[in-house]
Image: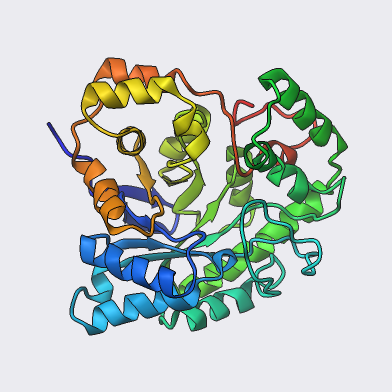
Length: 360
């Protein structure tokens, strides 16, 4: 039975290449624990390391990469390093930058308005001359408490963190109330995203990034980039797992020639509360996480799960070599899709009355 492809290709205006399909995530890893984890991941065979300015771990990630290269374990050309900038709206000031579930250090360079400085700071913190993939971390542009898109887009994570007992219809009612309150100037929002994208294009032209892309962008915002992008995004990194499978987003990416990269594949709620995942894994003689990772790869979406344990690193990497899911098993996981995001919700970013392109 065939293993998953080692890379997923992309071909968009101005960019053509391939991203490693299995990577190592570093969110929530810090300091020496992060350093040790990245060194272990590279030793285990990972060649794609994913970080972000938001994670406050560029220094240990970069030091681990540089030390692995110096030790002769790998060459820089063999590694694919991804990082993300411009997470916060331009009006962020450090007091209105709540991030659900993430312990981070406020950095004024991590906004849409400061993207050029953010790129330079990211490279300085990593101690690298370039990254392989540089992403705009999310498309939100307004931090206002009620009317802004930033808080409304991040709100779904509260349901997971609080172990909410709300029924799905009650959860949808809360989200609908939040959505109704959002009132963002669409033209100003798009101008803010365009300015950040121009900073990434400049970084690519200067050799600071081999490829550039976006994260958490719904199809409508990717299509809107045609009005200002000289180079189209090569990759869109999004939450992706059986309960949040975004069929329309995948269709759009395929038609556009863009690659998708997943975060949240190891989401504990999605796995631990699903007897279907447990049954499919048992029937495959695998684990729930490996099964979900293999399903994700089977959808043509790159993965980069996070762990600090070498044994788990090896198991996650080995998921790519597992046999493909049988049609009945793939269909069983497909049927779990409820377009249920735990992290970032795209709907507040779309115009009022718009067709919910992520099928929410």
